[in-house]
Image 1 (cartoon, rainbow, N blue to C red):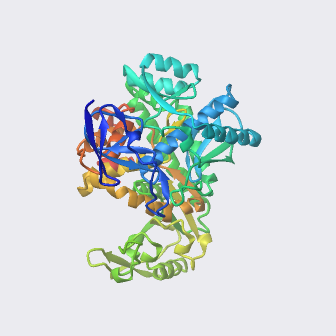
Image 2 (image 1 turned 90 degrees about the vertical axis):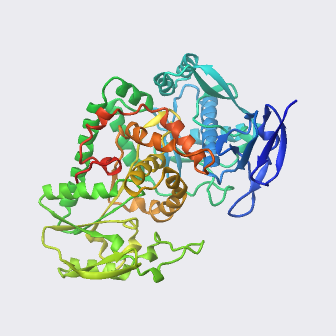
Image 3 (image 1 turned 45 degrees about the horizontal axis):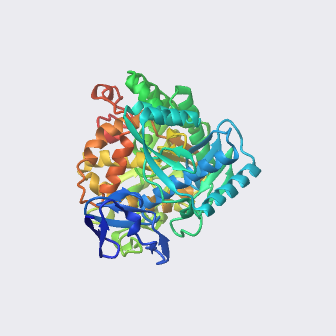
Length: 557
């Protein structure tokens, strides 16, 4: 039998594998945790930078890197498999219920039964059934089915969204995964068996529960519990909006676009979002006797700049006069900037800002005084003053945008009752199907890739490779404080993924297979392949004030 040479990146050794042999036959059981050095189970493999299941057969020479859950692709593989485990346990205990994974939350994935409030005792039973299935170490398997047969199968399992998505794709075949006689469809590989899924928990929450998965910091423990009710309400409101439009899934979105409804959907979404900015201005106006400062925060590519400009317009409609202070001008001199664990300047740390000067300026403005605003020279790495002064009149409202705007430690000396805080992010409730929610992180990554390539000349490869660092900053400085907001604003638009596919797909295809960003590019391309793209004539209908114009160009704000 022909022998194939496999170069293993993990240990630098070469292995011989018979043609058609499976990756798991040469995979180590564990690899070292990059943070603690502890042994972590191998979950999947990157074959020439492309994610593959450990059960995949190999017919040609490759370079292979085995990955654990600390790798983003390993983490996603674990979550897909854990979702299927939960689905199988539900079918065992509650065969008449329709199980849905609605969206991600700070503490895990929010799950529920359709149209019902789950009881605590049902959640306890479900947790024990999942643990039983883990102990049995049941295999996950994959088959290829005719698409129309798969659609019928999913409908028989009360998964109409999954069937509708498959129908909208127009493909002849589709992959179907199986666990203990139950079928499902996922958009990436799974772990070999349920025995890999030992770390999870079910936390009762709202009308269902949070499916908690292992923490990045300690894979032996689940992700820490965090406040998440305000975020849940925002996502729930967007879910109601999706239902009102008849677009709760990508399959329904594709059908609307392919039926010629793109322009009407664009107009409807933009009208709703404009109403949202007006509602924010109404809330600020209602407390104008007390509040003089508006802080706006949100993660990367959430549309903070456009949101602050559109909010300012709506404030003017309410006869308030918005003024803007750019928090970036309050950085300390470069030599005072704190360092991160790698010895690099940490510009996202709270200590990178001159908090004393900022607090003094805000207190002076609130007292009716005048301040001279700094301007930061990023090339020289220090602030300077050029005579630009500001004071607040009776109808003035100060709008400030920055990553620390929800952290009370940013301006502890300022009367907090004078501040109105807003959290803005692209929080889509749109789902691929019943148990595959769309990552808001992916949505923002695509936004950033399109914008940075257009405005800053940054390649899509560099955007992907920098994204992990961006995410670390968000997890440390933004997400822990999002529940501090007085209002949360969802910048997502139902039509934006079809728009982003049009712009992002050709950028992603430029990434070469030899690049370390290739696996992520392949994953994003596969995700986008499920979404019908907008056409140029439809894109032309997007108004120049749209938040999405911040990313694709043509904005007039």
